[in-house]
Amino acid sequence: MFGMLLEGYVVTLQIFFLTLLGAVPLGVLVALGRLSKSKILSRIVGAYISLMRGTPLMLQMFAVFFAPYYVFGIKTDKSYMFVAVIIAFIINYSAYFGEIYRSGIQSMPRGQYEAAEVLGYSNSQTFFRIILPQVIKRILPAMGNEIVTLVKDTSLAFSIGVAEMFTTGRALVAGQRTMLPFAIAAAIYWVSCMVIEFFLRRAEKKLDYYHD
Amino acid sequence: MTNSTIDAQTQQPAVCVNNARKAFGDKVVLHDVSLSIMPGEVVSIIGPSGAGKSTMLRCLTLLDTYDKGEFSYGDIKVTTQGPHGAVYDKQAMKAARMRFGIVFQNYNLFPHYTVMKNICDAPVVVQGRDKAEVEAEARELLKRVDLTEHADKVPCELSGGQQQRVAIARALAMHPDVMYFDEATSALDPKLTADMHRLIREFAASGMAVGIVTHEMGFAREVSDRVCFLIDGTIVEEGTPEEVIEHPKDPRTKAFLAHAQD
Ligand SMILES: Nc1ncnc2c1ncn2[C@@H]1O[C@H](COP(=O)(O)OP(=O)(O)OP(=O)(O)O)[C@@H](O)[C@H]1O
Ligand SMILES: [Mg+2]
Image 1: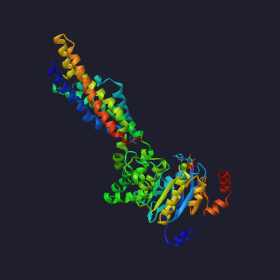
Image 2: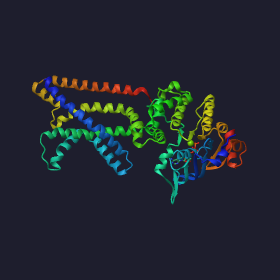
Image 3: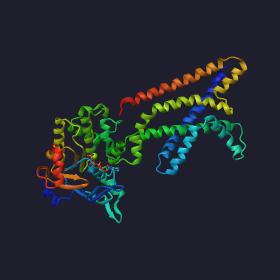
Image 4: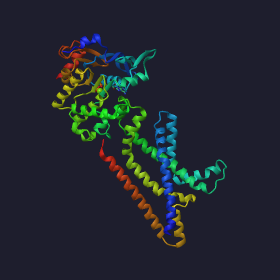
């Protein structure tokens, strides 16, 4: 039983890490699009963020899962289930991360940009050397919350039949008439979140050498 | 008192602005302002709140642009006169940024960098200078502004006056021809004000041009070679501190001084 749960957990971890791998950098594009001087681009990205935040992730997953067939008439096989989950998670979390980045970037005082400008830093030097390191410190707590939420959100993948840990747990509970698999699954989620929180606290401590 | 009048015939100004105009929407903030600072000269811009001092300083430091006028740093012509006003040249702006340094009113140090890195980062990253050489120079600069023990601290561990001196060292490390100070002494006690006076005179003695924007008449009178009164976007009067502070001619200066001195 424990072994089967662990197999599910591997899928959970895959969803978790692949989502982070996609959404952490894509969020930068979302933030830059939202902050763009082009009104049209900013509006489009704004609408996308609003849609992602205003509809359930589970629905978005169904949309991504069924879109190839109902919109484009393409038949998909079973392997597409996992891909659909990853795509839905990435586009959803990119919106959330993008908003966190945007608020972090906008919270930076103008004086930092001006000091960099008069010292002759180029735009990209200013962003990567002066702005980004300070933004990271500012957004770390909000990112922490979102990442912990992601751990738990992975369980939504069961709704389109991807057998991650929660799905496995549910099948075991149904088959063995005991709540124990749920309890074990809960413990594994909890420990995972604690591990993440441990690393986040370490990172926050490391950046605690200054305040502004 | 200084030899700036002799220099004026032989040297070109370190910074020169001719008939510059700046408006925000319909509101004209600077009307045909002309200002130049010679190497080795300390010039203060004084004026009431809203006169346009900060706007002038922002334009001088290329954080904002004049709508009209000629503007140069030494031999670098930052603007040329186009049919619709001043045209800024991108390359010239880039080169001009290496000619001046500014100490902002609230310093704008980089909080995530140590004092040392605040000073060394731009010379290394922007000017491409040798890191070890820049660091050695930074230590000299820190000695000069009395911060030797603070090299490895971050700005939030320093007092306001110490942070200002880091900002001075950061600007000096770029080897500017012109140094600007926004409200140089408003946050300083008498001892630190005296130190600042000494430093500014040292900069001038080494051939640097110094531009100060300030409310503080006393400091401006003591440290400046020349004082410009900026009132309602116009330089209404300029001259040595004795001339314009002790014996103002323009009625607007007189009115301003009457308010300022009581
Ligand atoms: N970005 C801006 N947009 C519109 N108006 C502005 C802007 N910046 C300054 N002004 C206006 O320009 C005028 C001059 O402002 P400025 O800040 O240059 O005055 P100042 O001499 O520095 O005053 P103070 O001594 O209070 O700092 C003011 O009337 C101000 O309202
Ligand atoms: Mg001002």
